[in-house]
Length: 405
Image 1 (tube, rainbow, N blue to C red):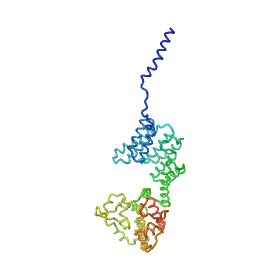
Image 2: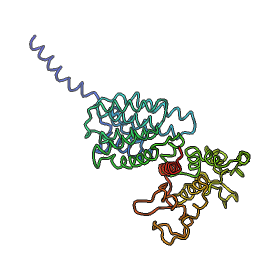
Image 3: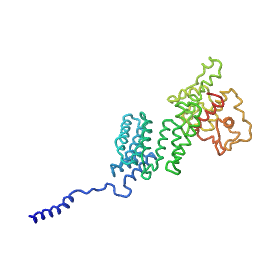
Image 4: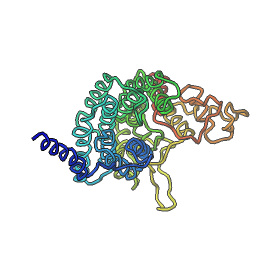
């Protein structure tokens, strides 16, 4: 009996390797050294920076193929879908991409386990909400920011973001989009104070300088939505400047106050409407500027169309800005001598503007009154584009010089 039991036990033990040998062994999907989810994820995020969304999508999908539980890749796919929401002209396709973005962050990325993956998830939420600009998007972004702040993250395990200060950087961008410039400046300052030479330091430094200039330009004055939207632009167009002069400086009201006869004021109107401003969002403001014949913002003759056009999308240069504001100053003060105040000077304080230049008198009128300023190098840079912050700051200084409130 004992011998029989011993034989059965030996048979059972011998059969174990055979049984397990019949099962298929687990084979890793991605085996090459660089064929891993972390590598594909980082490359995908870099592709987003470069605007190569299709390449980024392939990288994130490969990361999830290598490891379906690699949650950061879902955040990357969500960011891509958010960008496509903005790019889509068809409302139907846009709605599909919006739902995809929500699904990636709310249903997939939200399942992240480690604090590092959760941090990645919350930054993705901030970025997606900022891009898509949906309902209550800023509240959602701020909520994600607060939750990310509570995590205990090992920065060495952040594959792409690399530092906790990245959270402040992207929250700063969210505040820029919301036109909360003071809050944006504070967040970018937090990045700069976190560490020197970090991945986000250089970008935050540029953003902080821009926000600081905007905050200075808006100090002490009330700026409407039009002004705020133009404030963040790196270059101001002729249409933008017309809008600022009418909406922020109130030139129509100010100029009208210089004309004592109502009947004369009632007869004033633009001589014609240029064809290229018919569908411009600032059409009314442009017509107001044309009515008052502001020098430097008149229609221009276009050789191609053989017609006078306003050219609303043409970028305003610093020299042109001085010329335009000089005419506004003359119209506000009624002092025609301003137009020739600096004629005949033999020496210019600016190495890049000669006293014989057509804009020299205007530049001198603006800089001598502190309405515009030269560069630290001593140059005026007349051919550089006027930024939104520069335009707002100039209007603020003009208001102060004229006691306009």
